[in-house]
Length: 387
Image (cartoon, rainbow, N blue to C red; front, side, top):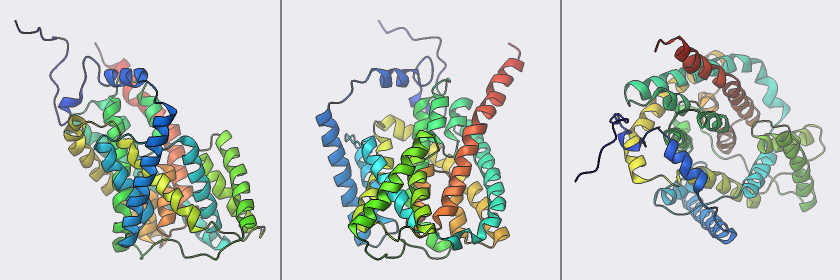
């Protein structure tokens, strides 16, 4: 006798038909997250070693063949492949914080008063960045709803260009399918880190890694990192977005601005930090099954294409109005994570002050206005819709 079929769940439609658990999208996924047994310390250690070793190997290969942002993008590609193959990966939070500390301190050493000479044009580019964020969300959401047939709430949160912590926290309290949201956000960041460095050489002025720096004494490096750590912890306690990275960068920049330090972070510390960041992005695909990948890949790629067209158009307009490097503007307008995109811009040789200011502006805007937009789109509209 055949099993009875549920009559309360409509047949799924669209590119993500195989993804929807019944009766509420994302409910089974949330339940699985809440009931997973925490791994042992040994398992975490092994997973961390595998993640960082494979990421370093990928970075080395990319470096040997002359790829831009090699250590970061190489680690990203390798760990993404491992994650999709089912490998257990991990980058512990303390390790990520150390990576952000080193990268922030290094970015601060690259700042100079000359970089602020063009700050008068920042309001123009930031205004267009705000337009870009609205356009990216509207265009991506329209694509996901009308073409990919996603539900409106999943499409709304999947379209947010960055501020992942805010987006995930909000989406978890709604009927949005968390797997769609997480996969779409991870796919966008993956594509940006993997492809953006190779494209920028064709669009903007040629850029590469920051120039080689003179060696500093161990004492000078220790003082630089200690001050950067103090400001990073302070920013983190104050809940500044990207607190450890932005705080460390601020502390390092102040030391150099006042002539209190002339130290630079050596490559032996910078390279592992890039690997940690790249591996941390790649492992976001961990737990993605084949059904998820095959059913939602096209939808995520389509939404990314829409977001890219909108952000590049706004960036090129900003470059025209401010007479600045198009590559720098495109990187600053790219809809990715604050820390990742700021560091990627620095690795490509762009102004870290400009990058951090614009990505912080975007993060703050999304964090403030996303709840309001969700309220207007869903709560008020639902109240006005007759039963």
